[in-house]
Amino acid sequence: MENHFPVEKFQAIETPFYYYNMQLLEDTLQVIKEESEKYGYHVHYAVKANANKKILETINSYGLGADCVSGNEVSASIEAGFPGNKVVYAGVGKTDKEIITGLKNNIGCFNVESIPELEVINELAEKQGVVANVALRINPNVKANTHHYITTGLEENKFGIYIWDLEKVMDKIEELDHVNFKGIHFHIGSQINDLDSYKQLCVRVNELQELFKQRRAIPQIVNVGGGLGIDYENPDENPMPDFKAFFKIFDDFLELEEGQEVHFELGRSVVCQCGTLISKVIYVKEGVNTHFAIVDAGMSDLIRPALYQAYHKIENLSSDQEDEKYDVVGPICESSDCFGKAVTLPKTSRGDIIAIRSAGAYGEIMANQYNLRQLPKAFYSSDL
Ligand SMILES: *Cc1c(COP(=O)(O)O)cnc(C)c1O
Image 1: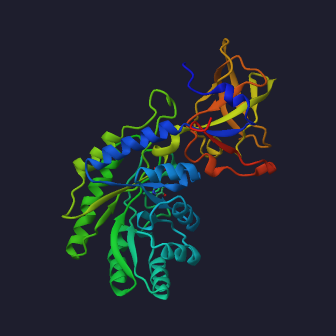
Image 2 (image 1 turned 90 degrees about the vertical axis):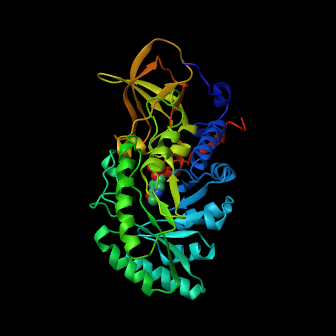
Image 3 (image 1 turned 45 degrees about the horizontal axis):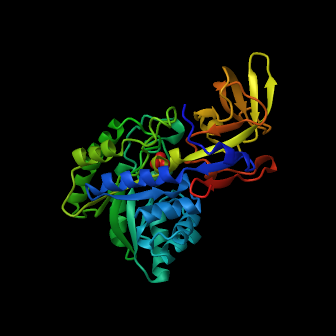
């Protein structure tokens, strides 16, 4: 494989660290912008995928909004330059302090998940002397074909308002003076590669729109969430998902009322392929049936394999010898601290540089200090 990483430069940097290909991020943002603008769609970036300041600033420079799931994400978005009215805030457990952060920054919309939350937002907005825009996060009961930990749009999940409660919630909104009904919001899950799930979502949204039409409360915003998947197996062949086909599904199947806006909240598909976790082999150890390549990155730097049994492509950037099989493991005292079993790599030695690919989403942001390890640093192609 042709090597596009600046390996010599990596050798001079203390490992492990995240490396971001900023050109790929910008190319991805450019395609998102072009393909969504065709239909006048609004795209928000789901900050939880990666809240690295430089990445947020780059995303903001392409005109996307920010989709947040905590008060600190709201603050980080504002600090990175996102205008308040382009920030939306979702989450089942917003605290009073977090809601106040949203209100003070005049955010575009709170995506509300329950009646008690609606009442608290109303009360806090009244105290601030403002009216908060709210969208209802509806649990559409659409099954996304993905890992069960990352499906969110099913009745058994904790997220959203059930369809049978909607009338009650709308009655409540009409009673309250400091919330303004702005839209409806859906999010069916993550790492969705089967566009048919989105087609089903469109059909469900169309059905639900009838309910709002009957009440003469037409939502201005129809927010269909995020979740578009990426190709973890072939990051070089498919450096970005088919955004063109993705947005087209909604144009083909969503039936809109006059003046309705369609919003998206893409996280993984924006940032995943631009990030790589770079580490070094500390030891090669002979096991009973396998060789272990013990690297200096661990589950504290990238937890997805341990948490979701997620696959990441692993490459040895230093060797071009004969292929062998290795279990690539980290130094942390947990058996689940393993990046891949029986991975085919060229013959690997102490000091070789190992790239763990497609780590730009839910990588650096999920890093922790277990075993009192240092948090990984980040380096950018534009600076090296
Ligand atoms: C996580 C999340 C997203 C983004 O999901 P991706 O799979 O990263 O695109 C969007 N909206 C909400 C409400 C989320 O919780």
